[in-house]
Amino acid sequence: MEVSEGFLDKKVGFDGNRPPEPKLIDSCVHCGFCLSTCPSYRVLGKEMDSPRGRIYLMDGINEGDIPLNAVTAEHFDSCLGCLACVTACPSGVQYDKLISATRHQVERNYQRSLPEQLFRRLIFSLFPYPNFLKVLLVPLFVYQKLGLQKLVRNVGLLKRVSPRLAAMESILPEITIKSFQNSLPSEIPAKGEKRYRVGMILGCVQRLFFSPVNEATVRVLTANGCEVVIPESQGCCAALPEHQGQTEQAKALARQMIDSFANTGVEFIIINAAGCGHTLKEYGHILADDLEYRDKAKEFVAKVRDVQEFLMSVGLTAKLSPLTDKPLTLVYQDACHLLHGQKISVQPRQLLRRIPGVKLREPLDAAICCGSAGVYNMLQPEVAEELGRQKARNLLSTGAELIASANPGCTLQIRKALQSQGKEIAIAHPIELLDYSIRGVRL
Image (cartoon, rainbow, N blue to C red):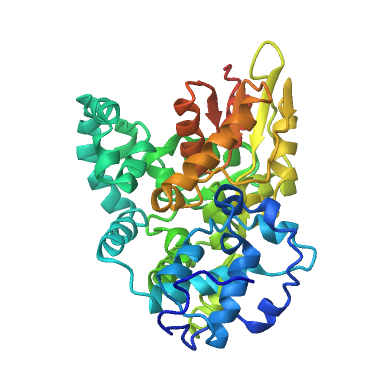
């Protein structure tokens, strides 16, 4: 395999703290089945921006033949972490473990430029901390209400100054008074006979920008016999820092989450955001070296369920009503960390088909990432925009009247892509549609 110029300029490599395992690297037979499923390879068209190419780089850095530098780090950064290659690989290569280990190595051993460091520090100082983020909502609320957002976007000045800041601003949803409110109590009783006592995780972006989804989740759970516990001490699930190699921050947030549900007596812990759910189920790996928390992490993970996964396993008891007077055509958008990370694809579709009058259509390339990928659309805006455009076209081509999306990042990314194409189509979380159906709300 040809090595690009610049790979061999400085021999800096991985350290001895959980580098990519040679055994996992050697399981790749370089067959190329991953290439057509890899979104970064589709857009960039470079071998080193594919899973196969990145595994080659990991091996070379492990062996000391290739340095960890600006060139190699760029190829690792181009990975969305969507895990489509894991699903597609006939050899069972655990690329998820390889890229996770590599990202933590990159953050420890590669010195990024000062602007890059500052931008990443901004992201990881804000998004995993809902209380800090809520403070920022005040000037952003004013920014939107005074019409400054429309002016900034029309002029395009921010994109010329900083494409990354422009990408961050472009997915900013409408901020309302509800964004500042916490309307959910710490315990909500089941309606009718109590079947389960479950905990619920609010998420960070979800609780501030998609609070109606959380409220709908509570109503659906209680309507189906669940007593819901929402610990006030819960914070971020650690998805964003874990996916970007922020080792200590991810561990600290995971410990906090585990502690917040300790002694609550819940049988299950429910999450309604795909990216969060995948990370929550990885706590055993994240805290594997923590003697105090590794067993607690395993116990915690055993209780974690995506809300759609949970509802299909325990069964619905609430009666469902049609959402419209005529058949409603939906298209379900597979979030990568639900489909590839948690292997959940059938359950959301089964739930949606339970709603009377719903007709479900499937898009082309359903398994390809929309480009959101946590904070990828802020760090790699050009690749993300192209993937968003492709995803929007494929969803629109189904002729569906509504898009069902089970991840807030996907929803923001797809909404932005639709708007850029001058298209307006409603997007709702599947749990919101179930809530409407239970309450008899017509669309």
